[in-house]
Structures are given as structure tokens and as C-alpha cells.
Image (cartoon, rainbow over all chains, first blue to last red; front, side, top):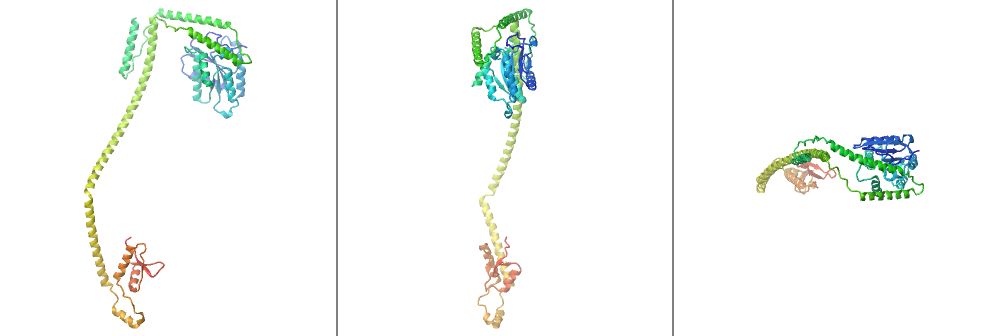
Length: 177
Length: 291
């Protein structure tokens, strides 16, 4: 069992790594494709996992992870429990701006089995931004990909003068209002 | 220094080019300056230095143990961590002085070129956007002009019609129209008189009052039935019918009185000159010939 740590390795030149954690592999695939389609001036590495911890035997080949996006499907209580269980397997320093919660399936409120309050509380508890999206809609998928990409750029330290912690503090204050 | 001058000249040229707003695009800036090995060496050295610093930081970070959130009050400890980290970041920013890029002229030239290329690219985009906008505006202008011309033509045509109408109004002045109407009326009146007198003559000649002697014979046969009223001519019957119809069109019926000679009434009814009232056989009216 290995804990994911934010600065456990040296970064790779001109590249950023995002880790998508969630039970819905189809949606992860969709989102990853959307992110890769976006125009960008750095190399992007997308790692996908259904749950944490990550297998220890591949630790040495895995690059430094800059951002972890936990995907929760509003229509599946299981996805929420899975994320809650995974959260204990990452270093606390990750919560200084390098974690976000991606809430999918918000487009069909009457099918929701997860309470909106539950995910809000989760974001509040871990001091991390909560992004709501509907990945089945192409426009929102693209917008979400762009948002994640921008966050990833900041988390990987590609934006001079803005740190992940600073950015998440900004996001948080805007959410609280 | 020569290279810097060259770069400045190129920048000036580009600016002029854009100012004069020509429709061809600016010449592409070729990076013909091959960075001298000295400059490259210098930059690489700088990078190496930064990387060394990073490795140092990394090793320090690895010395720190893994931090996990406690089960209870995870949020509080997390917030404490954030405060610490933000304070550290704040201090770091306070201490930090702005980094100066390499003063090597070769590097500066290369950077300047890159920047110029970026500007050139942006300006080209602006140019093409403006051009397409211009084109659209020209088309709009053309369309509006055409519309204006059409409207002008319409106004001209209406003006011509207006002039014509004015002339006609002058021709048909009120006086003239009145005079014309008067003369027409006089003519019609004369014609009417003529018709009336002709009709009167005709009636007098062909439909006289019954002979006195006939009534005298009747008198002898039945003295009790001797008519006490003076009979009227067909002419007068007709006149009364006409007057009745004209003066009270809503009630054109005339009651048959004893002064009407029955054969004449019969004649009028038979030839459809007069009509009997549908409910009251003693009343007749003139057929509405004028309608």
C-alpha cells in the first residue's frame, strides 16, 4: 500500500500529470479524450484509477502527480463511498490545492441518489473545489476539460506567480460567497 | 549590438507596415540569427543551476514524513495546514526579488524575435478580421445604396404623379364644374318637360274620359247608381301614382276612389303599370320602374 504524495518525485519537463479517480470508466474515458483534444503548449499525462491506493509495484515508473480529480456520479451512491474510501490514501499536503471533486450526472436531478449536500460537505471538509458537470453533453464536457486543464497548469507550476494553494484559496472564497 | 539594432529596425518596419494598413501581410521574420554557442551555454548553465536547486528542495521534502489527516477534526487540521502553508508562501513572496532574464545580447535578440513573431501573428489575425468586417460593411453599404436609389425613384415617380394631379385639379375648378352641372341640369329639365308634355298629349288623345252620353244612358237605366263624383282622367291617375311613389317611397299605395274609372284601373293593372296591394285589393301602386 502506498500513499500518494504531492512532491515525491522531480517534475518532468513541460508536462503535467492528472489522475482521475472514479468508478465510471466510460465517463473517465470521455473526459480524458476531451482533455487531450484541447490545444495546449505542454505535454499532458492522464492517469486513470477506479480507486486508491495505487498499486505499489508500479510506483517507480509513475510520474509526479500534479492534480487528482475525484469523480462522483450523482446517480450512484457507490461512487461516493468509493471516493470517500480513497481519500484516506493520499497525503494531507495534496489537499493544499491539488485535489478537486468532479460531480457528474447533475443534468438529471430526478435520477440523483446522492444528496447535493453530501458532496458540498465533502468539498468543505477537504477544503477542495467541487465542480459540477454533465459529461454526456458535449459543450459541458469541453468546458469541464478546459477548466481542469487550467487548474492542472496551475497545479503543475506552469503559471508564474500562482500556486495551487493560492488558486484554491481564491476558488474557495468565491464558492463560500 | 549590431544584432539589436537590426531587431529594432525590423520592429520599426513591422509597425510602419501595420500603420500604413496595406493589404498584404508583413514579411515573416526569419530567425536567421543562430544563437551563439556562448549564449546557449549560459542559458544551459542557468537551467542546470535551477535544477540543482530543485533537487535540493526535493531531497528536503522527502525527509518530511507522510502526513495523514486524523479521523476526527480533519477539517480543522487541514485548515491549520493551509494557514501555515499560506503564511509560508506569503513570506516567500515578501522575500523574493524579481528575476532578471539573461543579459546576454544573443538571448535578448532571440527573445525579442519570438515576441515580435507573436505580435506579428496577432496583428495578422486582427488584419484578416478587419478585412472581413470591411468586406461585410461594403456589402451592406452597397445594399443600402441600392435601397436608397429605389426609394429615390419611388419619390420621383410620386412627385410626377403629384404634379399631374395638381394640373388636373386646376382644370376641374369648382366654378367650371358647377357650371357644367347646371347646364346638364337645365338640359335634363327641358327633356323632362318635353317628355311630360308628350305623355300628356298622348294620354289626352288616346285615353279620354268616358263619353257623357254613355253615362247618360246608364243614368236612365239605373238612376240610383248615378255617380256623384266627377271622374278623373288617366293622366291624373298616373300623376297621382307617380307623386305618391316619389314623395313617400315607403308607402307608395293609393286607395282606389270612386273618381277612378274602373276600366282604366283594370288597364293599368293588366299591363303591369300598376300593382295591387297584396292584402288590400282597394289600394294600388305604381310599378317601381325607376329602380
